[in-house]
Figure (cartoon, rainbow, N blue to C red):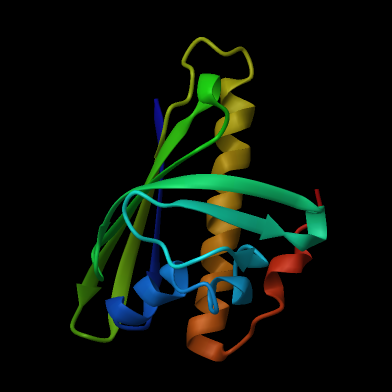
Length: 144
């Protein structure tokens, strides 16, 4: 089972793409830090200071300004995330994030998918704030 989230950012695809893959930019809207540039075959360490958390992702595929695919989660619950970028008229990009790997038989499936959707929408809202308005402190606002 998968979960899909779609969002529009009023910036060209190359700016949206670089915000994800450039370790100097990702801290402005999502994780606090990324260990290195996202490229196929790399394992990236992501740090989230406000939750004192760290995660590793395996980059599966990258198509510049168009697509990023990575795996994350523990082996028995590993998910595949695909970020698609569709540039519209060189000034807007539609981002579609699909996360696959949810267990359809999990009794907590609905709650997990809702939490997942909330996380992606919040991250994309922070990305929009960062790229369109230069606001970089939104990501610490979510209280769980």
